[in-house]
Image (cartoon, rainbow, N blue to C red):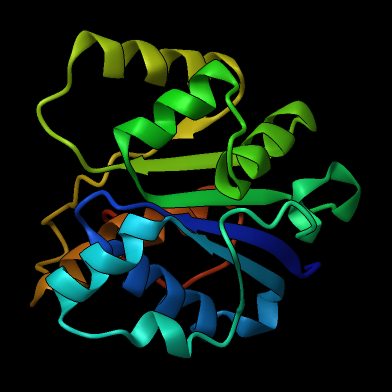
Length: 188
């Protein structure tokens, strides 16, 4: 199995636990990872601090790029990052991606992934959804993106918040093509 180059975008949508668990799982899967490039929105850091009570995002073993660093490798298709995961994905970020507005590194990277016909996985957490949100999801899907809502499953009997978030993150990593040991319906 070839190692993967992945971009992870973290927005200011509520659900920082999903991003934390995603980073934890990527660390666990290091043998399958060639590179992880990370971009946080300004609000993402503030929401992380509020929801998780720490600044552990500063300790990630991945390269973190400024949200306006258009010299980041994944700002161009030539860098061959094959997957981008935006987790959690705010409705504002999804709207900009759906309309092709590349006003920061996160939306530029998503634009690159879509134009190169690579894998874009957006993990929205908002509820309820307006018709605008649904139409943006439809547009992203028609452009080749995957909408993987942060809707946890319960059949694995998760024990805590992180275990619950892991049910979503593992599905996202499955979609990204990682080989991982996770709960499988009727197999465990």
